[in-house]
Each structure stands twice: as C-alpha cells, then as structure tokens.
Amino acid sequence: MKKLLLTILALTLVLAMAIPALAADELLIYDFADGSQTDGKIGWNEGLTTQYGIPEPTVNVQNGQLTITPQAGNFWAGSIYFDLAKGCEWLGDLSEGLESGEYNYIRLYIKNNMPCDDQTDTFGFSFSLQKMNDTNEYNTNWGAADFSKALFFNMDGSKADIEISPDINNGSSDRNGYKNGYITLPKGFEGYIFISAKLADFPTHTTWGLTPLDNFSNLGRLELDLRNAGTSCDGSTNNLILDDIALVKTAEVPKAPVNPDDDKTDKPGEDGDISIVLYAAAAISGLGALAIRKRK
Image: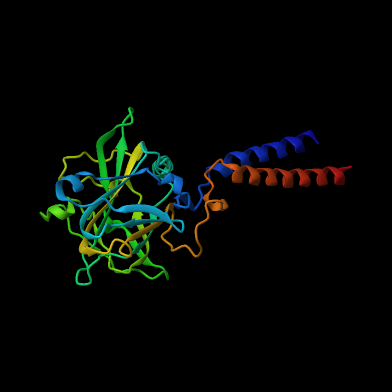
C-alpha cells in the first residue's frame, strides 16, 4: 500500500512539473480591449510635426480595436510608438514570449482604410522593435521585421498578395533603409500578418546607424511606421485599424475572436495549468483508492 501511495505521489509530481513546460499554441499579448493601456501611452514622432508640418494623428480605441486616423490633409509619413516607459506593460509579455523561442510568428490583425487618395496605392507599413537598457533608457539595439519572411492572409484564410518594399540599398528616403522592412498594404485590405519571430529576421536598418538586436530581452518599444497615406485624408474614415497582437506557433487565421480569458492564452504556470494538475491528481488518487479497495 505504501508503494502504491508513493507511486501516486510521484506521478502527480511529474505531471505538476511537465504540464507548465508545455507552451500554449497561442499567447495573446494585447487585444486593445482595455483602453487604459493605450490612453496617453502611445507616442508620436514629434519631429515629423515640427520639421515637416505633419499633424499628429488621432490614436484611440474604438470597439475594442486600435484606430489610427490621420488629420485632414497630407499624411505622407508617421511613426507611432508603443512604449514600456509610457505604460505599455504588455511589451514585457512580448519580450518574454519572443525570448522563450517557443513561438514562430507574431500575429497582427490589420484593416486598412488608407491610402486616402483613390489614385495612389503605395501606403507603406513597417514593424520595428527596440530595446531598453538597465536604466530604462532606449539604446541603439533596433530591428525592423523582414517582411520577406512573413505570411499574409485575408479574413477567409486565403493568402493575400502583399507587395514588399525592396532592400536597404534602394536609396529611397521614404523607406528608411530597411531590409524588406515595409509592405505596401492595398486599400481595403483586412486580414492578418504573421511576422517571423526569429531574431535573425529582425535586422537593423542602416540609415540611422543603429546596431542589431542581440536578443529579445528588455524590449521597450514597438514602432509602427506609416508612409504615403495620401494628400487628401478626410480626418475620419481614412484610418488604419489594428487588433490582437499575439505570439503563435502556426500561421492560421483564427476562427473566432481571440478571448484573453481562454485557456489557450494562459501562460505556463498560471491557474489553468494548476487546475489540470489537480484534476490529474484526483484521477490518479481515485485509481489508487480503487486498487486498495480491490486488494482489501
């Protein structure tokens, strides 16, 4: 009987140690449902306003989605910052998830109601990550996603035909010298982009003399750089809508809206894993009791 009880305890311990090690297929980083994580916490490249006269766009949460709306007029460039120093604490989860190496893609929902001009279809979009040092100051370790390693899907799951801007040597000032760092989103596009989560697929750009990311730890900024939105933005319906930043293992369009309370979004070691262990322990204990009864 003692041997049986020891066996039950050992199996329970093994389950308790093994289950937290199993990563979820999907880790939801942020779904923009909580406006408090965006209000006053998103930065803007003010140099674009002071030097080039580009007014700061309106950035807010509408219907649980982030909406970026340029002011009326010309919006040929714009840099939006999500900063840890400003209170975007979910960047810590992104950093931890990427550093774990357990996920293959960063998934992002996009709906593009730009460019503003019917005659142009050159709206550019980039996705960059920047580190912070030990004193919570931004350092020069920066990487822009190489979109040649990304996948693009429409809402129905079909692959989207998205144009990728050329390499860093194209000499174009409106693409910052990124290596495949911009995609040209067609007007009306709605779907998901899956950005490679490999460190090697976040090369630095050369225009600003920055150094490459050496790892994903201590990420302090996520930057979205927008280009060529048009010269006649209406200030209301011309916008870019973002949602559901997540780390995933496979590039599949979700069949239902992502719910941050779903078990699949639990981090290893959280309550969902503990409940599984308890259920397993109860089951094993029940089998042990049955065996003891039969033996008696």
